[in-house]
Image (cartoon, rainbow, N blue to C red; front, side, top):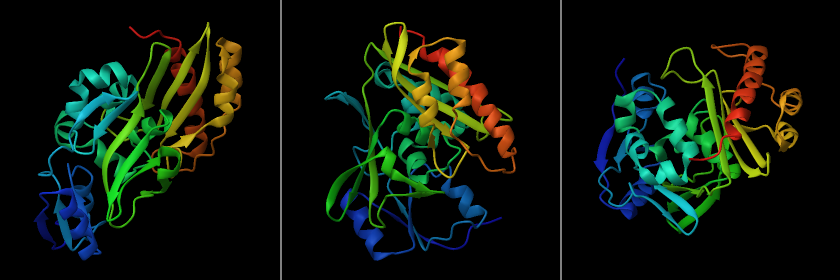
Length: 283
């Protein structure tokens, strides 16, 4: 299929992009376009104007400062995959990125675009939630920060205002006691996950504390499994992992990939795998 007709305009500055969003109520932002172009071709999206933000300088920055890792909205997946900053200070994101699509998609797709699109089966929204990260959004009144817990509102729905541009994401920089785990199950590598799990915790002696489990592919948004988190805090052994699996507070719906019952079972399989990853000390 071919997309419906639309106008196209490049924004050279962030202020220009914000103004254009205000002038055109049915406008959409174009960054990597790996999700947007597909929805256009399938006529699931029909904007009157595409605002290309790729020429706005400074939005591809990756840096660690003040105990946080900041990733600009236009940072490409491939750029983050090669980043020493991401590898050292955001190891959960480093683990997740190779699961995103294929190299051609990672060369063009952006981290900001993935977060803003908010596909419930995507890897990075779950990582942001597991890491207790935040989104920076810039609009007519300036910039504001939105915690991940409050950012994902529903199916492809976020807390971004109609004139706001997602400009960066921030996550706490990993320390020596940070432990992360990531796993997903997909029909083929590069497909959206049937079920996935991003996890973060703090080493506490021979056990774990502050466990955060963020599932994707099991609901309209990335989902915390809070009862399972509580059950996993402490010294990890088979009994504790079994208790965490039994406590999984998820209620997946049937979809084209699997029934809700299958998804719930697979969520437990992933929890067992990821729990063992959380015990691994950082190199």
